[in-house]
Amino acid sequence: MIHWSHKINIEYLARTHTHTHTHTYIYIPNTNMARSTRGKEGSTKAASTLKRKSNVAPIFNPSGKLATQYTNWVVSAGTAADNWDVHYFTKWQGIDNSHLPKQAAYINPMKKEWKLKGEEAFSEPSSIKAFFPRRDPSKMEGQFTIPAQEGTSFPWDLIITYRSSDSDTADFMGRRIAKLFTKWGALHPEYYRVAPKFEFQKDVTSSPPKPLNHYICDSQCLMLLKQTYAEENSKDDVMADDTVLANCKFVVCIVCYSMG
Figure 1 (spheres, one colour):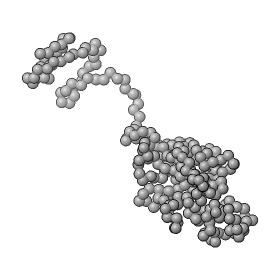
Figure 2 (spheres, helix red, strand yellow; figure 1 turned 180 degrees about the vertical axis):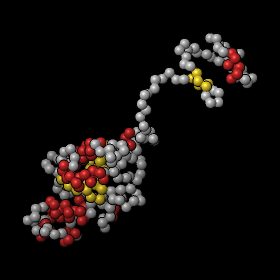
Figure 3 (spheres, helix red, strand yellow; figure 1 turned 180 degrees about the horizontal axis):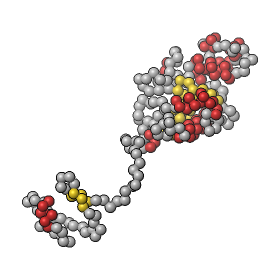
Figure 4 (tube, one colour; figure 1 turned 30 degrees about the horizontal axis):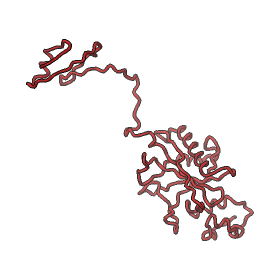
């Protein structure tokens, strides 16, 4: 039996429901019913009354995941070498940080800009002193670095900063770099299809702080040592300073160092 609260086209009902089963239809009237259109195979589809956009924007993220997947994390650490901090950058690893192995964030454009312009590369002073490959701390007997991505030969770069005041900390320096890199990336779409976002994640300074060559190779440590101390300091002066040697662990490689 068919029950209707309003009059309908019985001929259409007979044409579209030719089976012998008995159905009870509940008809809810709509006084502003949209007109129907007929598809390629004769089916009838009701046109939507929803308002459409005049311009449909392109979709650059086909996976439809959360925007936080584009956040690059900044991890900072103070070192045993006075005023020297290290900072490395990790790609987004999922909501629960479960995407393994971790991979380096893409900061090569910033690296090139800094090498070209130095302290004038970004909107304000960054205190960046070097971009160096991250040392693999599990292989301290040699000069091994961590790859940017498993299976590749590209090294995972980190940044070395030098504190300019007693109030500076690894945490402060890392947050400032995150802000500067985010701002710079947004101004350079030629390098990024989607503007990168950098956020400070954590300060991993240990107690006591690890020596500088836990994070970078000995040869890079020597470069920083030479930059830190004035030219009038001889190699013998540096080798005789127990504090410098203890903080930087240059006991083995200091013999290769020349102040001149």
